[in-house]
Length: 107
Image (cartoon, rainbow, N blue to C red; front, side):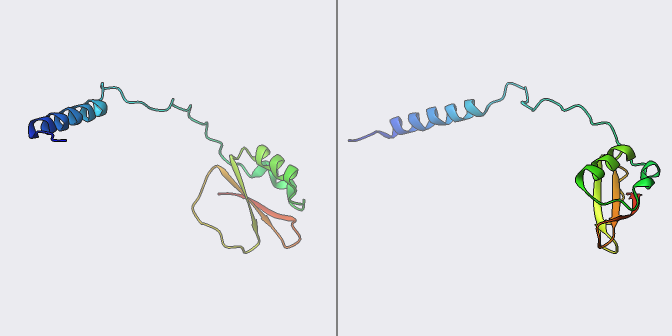
């Protein structure tokens, strides 16, 4: 089967035109619906100091998080290395080896 150069050029040009048309944009940008901004939940460790001496069971930790107004909670063992960036929405629960809370601090 013999195909002329003119036919090949026509097919190539038509294919290229289809590819370019398929990539063309009508000026609109598709994006996911915007999520509403989450309200800042700043930590206040003062109201939860009464939990010092308690065990770190899940229900107690969630109660502490809610009462402190924190968005997140981090449990650390005493003298455990931790990242030092300050996060105003985080409550740090410091525990001893027995799992008892010995300190509650924001950050």
